[in-house]
Amino acid sequence: MKAVFWISVLATLYTYLIYPILLFFMAALAQAARDLRFLLRRSERRPTHKAYMPSVSMIIAAYNEEQVIEQKLHNCLTIDYPRNKFEIVVASDGSTDRTDRLVKQYSTIGVKLMAYSPRTGKISVINRTVPLAAGEVIVLSDANTSYCADSIRNLVRHFADPQVGVVCGELKLINNEGEDAEDLYWRYEQALKFLENRINAVLGANGGIYAIRKSCFEPVPDNTITDDFVLPLKIRERGFRIVYDTEAVAFEDAAPSAASEFTRRVRIGAGNFQSLLQVWRLLNPLRGSIAFALWSHKLLRWCVPFFMITALFSNALLIGERVYLFLFILQASVYAAVLVHSLAGDLRSWPFRPLRLFHYFCSMNCAFLFGFFKLLMGTQRVTWKRTERQKVA
Image 1 (cartoon, rainbow, N blue to C red):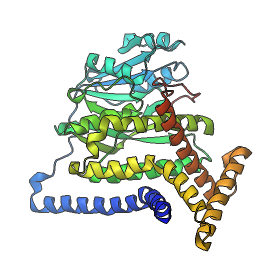
Image 2: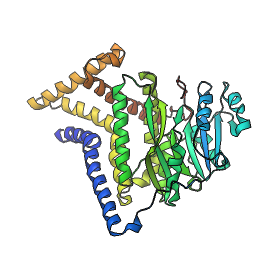
Image 3: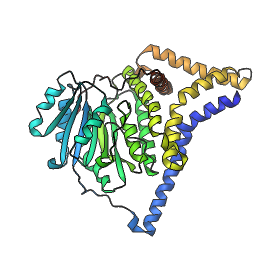
Image 4: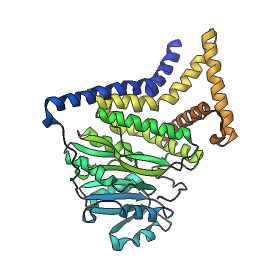
């Protein structure tokens, strides 16, 4: 039982703490090796092709987005990219509000509406729309995501390298005042993505801003929940690279409430476990760095809810020894404090920051656990529920 307890604890520590440390040193070594090759053989370093400008189609999957769709289209029209090479497509997934009517008003300036009915889900809309798009590069975006003017240029420049199949941009959360736990976790994830990019092991993309080479696109099953994870990794599975560019920036509102964030995390949790059935080949250690990252950053991370439960109950069976009694009391006290404060309401009013952070950690893992069981029972729908949003800039 001691072995079960310590394996659970160490597995959790590994995925959240030890892996980032290992990744940091691996990324540093990889960068040093590239610099050394550059010094020895300058011809091996590829230049940044800022002048490379292929035709681009931005596809905005939308469902009942009347609150933000006009602001999104205005934002698209401010993007610094040649208009004769930039196509804007709104793929409406059975919208029942004014979304379609509002988009049609922009048809005279080149915005295309592809309205689908009945509603079938985001990935189904993507599967049907990408083959109809005119661009050599497809940029996938959300209706509540606002792009910087140079974001498209920074995304597509990487496709000058024929080995690049996917480029992920930098998504920054706004309107997140007081939610320091979510903000810290988001910055932690972005840091991991930056380091994984150094070792050619980027896992998926940020759903609001990523681009794929159209010739690399192959439809994925219409019941896929996490398109921004599965689509890039299926392209990586075929031998193409995924690049993360921190200069291709977009902004998106953080979840408006803890409840909506929890619901989003449940959906992600279900999608995470489902995705293993589609990208399992990348878990093969012979795949190198991508397998290492997938095991360490994703698979073990998704198992943390089970590790936490196992650690608590195995600890309870060991309380006959003083050290394990202390550890059990510590675990039980922290979980009890989190539960009490969860019932108390607004997290931003909590004076003790570490407790807010641990609450977010527990909430996230509870959501993953719920997502796992929803997937197991077949109750997680592929369609998404629109949350209340503020307007994009």
